[in-house]
Length: 108
Image (cartoon, rainbow, N blue to C red):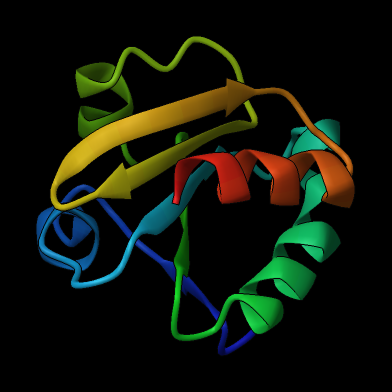
């Protein structure tokens, strides 16, 4: 994984996402998920382009059950944008880079 994307777990979610000083886009994903794999390179690009303005974190739903249950994750990939400890917006399903950047610009 790149240095621009951080892996979080149930245990690290609060300090890394909820207490972050910058907005955090959380990608809920799993190894077996095809659409999750297709969005991964787009997230890499966006992580580089938004460096300093946005943190991107990935949470594996197979290895971590508590956070996905708390936020009612039903399908993956689900992308959730957190600001100041609150979930501000979310999208379910893979999207293009232009769709993702439009989502971010609307909500950051």
